[in-house]
Image (cartoon, rainbow, N blue to C red; front, top):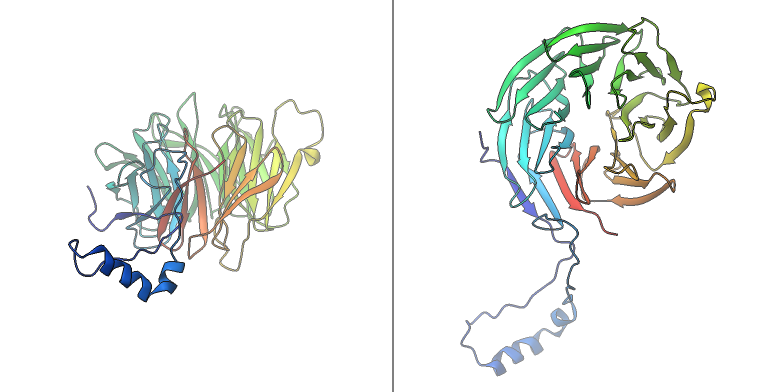
Length: 366
């Protein structure tokens, strides 16, 4: 299912001007020297390109992926790091190679409206998604076909996540105010938590025993997957605007939340935390910008829980050192809002999805 309209472009870190002889390779050296003397101002503009200490296996330090016909809302690397999936407002999911020319090798179709979030299975053979068409979907990567449409929501499905281990489950949150738990073995909804406001972001904890749901009402609700009570077991309060992104650390101890109040918060979600829920917020990170577009800007942990990254409506890719509580990188390049930033599982590479219809993949320095 390769798409001929898709392309990857190498984007050099620095650009150098070069003088090209117009007469061929057999011109006398003296003539070429005279040509150089005729344009000394160009000679002054020459930039010395230093040898670049590469940090990854990317073909170039920065790669630009183009081919989607509308805003790109989500991006995620496969577990082995060889592929990357992108979901777009054009209703399609593109699968790309990370290395070499970054070819688009599969287009997954089946949604009837914008794809808002995509995730890989732990084995890397399945891609899960949610859409504004009020459904979630399961796709076979090798065959490039939709295996199952998960219906049950009655409004836009804003977010979904799959369990990292144990019983294969998925959670989804939608504008109908519900958070649904799906058993992927039978591919149907097994429980629904209801709320009066829209749910914009959802995530499992590390063991899939709890569900975190971020709402339009500025709060994060924690539901018990085992007991499946109607009321949340805990509420995380502190944000002053809607929650647009959630992600649990790889060690399962901490939660990151992105909010339209222009902050990212770090929460201690260890089950045996002794303090009150109000004190679970450990830090507030600044730098992420939300604007009038009210996009669902996500937040993601790095592979070793040292760094985190988030999109921003100011067209920048933001990367923080979580332990030091400081902004490490503010990377330009996009011409539209950055919706999501994902880390490569094995190498210092980030991928960013933007409303400008492009994806950048680039390696980070020291």
